[in-house]
Amino acid sequence: MVFSSVIFISFFLPAVFLLHQILPGIRLKNGMLLMASLLFYAYGEPVYVFLMIGTAFANYLSSIALGKRRSRVLLAAVIVMNLTLLGIFKYAGFLAETVNLIPGVHLPVPQVTLPIGISFYTFQAMSYVIDVYRGVTPPEKRFSRVLLYISCFPQLIAGPIVKYHEIDRELSSRHASMQDIHDGIRILTAGLSKKVLIANTMAAAADAVFSAPHAQMGPLTAWIGALAYLFQIYFDFSGYSDMAIGMGRMFGFHFPVNFAHPYTAGSMRDFWKRWHISLTDWFRTYLYIPLGGNRKGKMRTILNRFLVFACTGIWHGANLTFLLWGLYHGLLMMLEEAAAGLKKSARRTEGERPGSAGRGGRGPAAIRKGAAFIGQAAGRIGMHIYTLLAVTIGFVLFRAESAEDGLFRIRCMFMGIDRNGASLSLGLAQLTPLFLTAFAAAVICLRPVPSRLKNMRGYETAADVLSAAGLLLCLLSLAGGAYNPFIYFRF
Image (cartoon, rainbow, N blue to C red):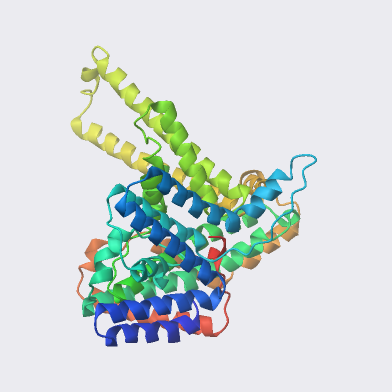
């Protein structure tokens, strides 16, 4: 069962929410929410639901033991257990195929179905055990609460990745006010609209282009596919996160923000502060800092960052393209940092030159200020264009079927030539009125709503009307059997 389905929006969610409101006491509410979460997962994974329960129970027992005695050996064993399970189900086939590239090696390639959301709930379970070991979180004595934390259906299959200490109080006592419910429904509806009205429309064009043979690829078609996927993955992923945050608010939980308008970023560093924030924070807290972070010299810092970005890439799926995507972002981050260092060094050198302070005094002050302002604005615009272009190129590699396919499509974007009418025809066929409307809506929604607009009289009423209209359009689209892909099967 997925959020963007009629059965979930029209039946499952209203029924669970109504029961949550009616039932008295936190124990009954938690019990019902736990059963609903297991039912939600079992609807699509009737066998692997037991794997999730077993994983939660093993980590629960480990946390109890670590609460009694802090043991690095036990912690290491628990981490290895979690990563081994994740590796078996997510990476065994990829590793076997990679080893088989060695001449003379013929390992059997295991055909294992990937449990939906395994990367999300495995990382949550690991964060809980590690936090217990560190003393950040006391071990929870009730297994039911640990299982609810790991399996809670709003954030189970697509995040955000929640730490236990962020919601432990709400597992014990929570209350959703009318304002919380109102805000939650609005956030939920906004996320659903992102997914159904924008991401799904972009997905149809992206899938058509990325599945087309190379003979049909030219600059226009390649760019249409790249931009369509750029919008698809953002509005799909952030839409699901918004839906999770909105549903959590309706039930009295406050999940962390997972996306903060990343396509407005002015550098790759800024982009990663805004993109999939919970995953970035997870790797920083549980991998980068334990490796030494930036405290053990420049070379060690570079190695740590590349390792983190490699893990970030491969976390998304068992394919060389994901690993290369992560390393690509790591390389850009290193280049940005090196450029910033050179710029600071040049400023210091300029400031130390004899008479350098006097040079700035030439010309009227107004001209100097105007020139500085124009230079800063041009610099910001240039950095924004560079960041968006770099992210777009990276996502082409991320979406491609192979590294060779991705590099071919990137080459077509910048050096391709329309050798025949097939490429142009394919590209123009994607530019339907629906696509262009969704594309325009996507561009508008990339930036946050201005504060002055929020403070205007009638804004709240207009927002509620738009939410209701968006929900109606989503339901009509889903009921009509519109294209509704689920991109989280890899995660």
